[in-house]
Length: 559
View (cartoon, rainbow, N blue to C red):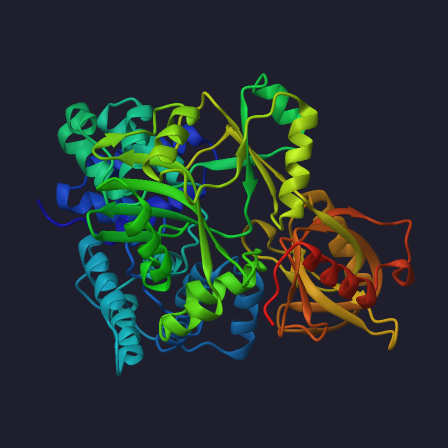
């Protein structure tokens, strides 16, 4: 059997772009998968959804947009006018690459044509290229791929690099396609993917071994699984009533979620994105070795940066720990981390993900001898629940998690068995600029630069950006409105007169050297447009400073 040309994967992408029906998407994917040899299935599945490696694999291409366009520029002779036209019309870098190669390519693609395996092997080499001269070598390898690709193939090579496929096939649709191609129930395929976290490997087993192969799938130590996710609730009553009172409340910590795997003295820690962050958290490793009283385990929790008194520090301090690769010991002393665990997924050979939450908690409590556990309460009334939430806020935390006591653990699923209830703050701010969107928001001004007014100078100072909380209709209306008050442009940003006031909700105010104001709003999202307020009635820099200082009534602060 000859190796499958990469053109088949690229032209599948073109077919997928032309339909929005989920059933049709999965049928197209299934037909493509059936034509592959076993060795081609894992890379083809991942490449189709814009991945080269499984999410838990630490390798990354690390090719900048500038490097990609430099490689493309070497293959074309584009006038300034054409470059501007392409920049204005293209919805993403892949589309821009296609347009440039179609209209200004210097020479035809070099033979032989690319195959799926060659593309995967070259991307692997790019990811593993490091050290002196690695940037030039990566560009050389990428140029080699692009020189053998036609315009459509090049489009999808660049899309994979940027992980922006935009053809409607996400992980869920791919799982449906795998199930259809293998003649299996989608639930069985999804379950295997939840436990292994590698669509490519799951597809290979499904298509070559069928149900018998997938029935054997189980959790693996040092293979992180996607975390279970929570929906947002507006009130304690909403969660309390949905769970018919069978609810556990936990402090929602302002830290980084971690999944910890242990076998004997080997301990690995994974982030929410399944990246290995063990090297940044030696103090957490030591704590697990000392306190976890089982030989094999997968447990979940939060790592929280704390001050000398044990009070939680703002989230940005924790990120300094996670980003640190050198001089870790000094940073450990400067920014200590407290571990709080809230779930047990596997203990000494026994998977617990199908056990109810209450049973998992009891197993965790026993395995940790009651230490390093998140504060938890089983309220009997809504009044008790609200009092516990206030306690969480006064302890410096984000809010509370509400969990159904009888619920199992669903990896990667945002179901209704967990609710998060955050303490949020609002401000009225002014839009001073907006960025042109791309993809679905192409042609709209859709990333708003938010500012507060300095009472002393009258200047509007940016405190963050957001496109969240706005409907498509509002984007369209605001684009027209902002263009009428445009002052200037720089790159993709349109600067406007400070006339439009919006109310934004956010979780925290952080110090920020990025902005002249010195502050940034964390998780800002638009709540409503304040047609009733003028810019001079919006909140000020002085108000923001006061709110920032007020946070430390309960949070810790580095001196």
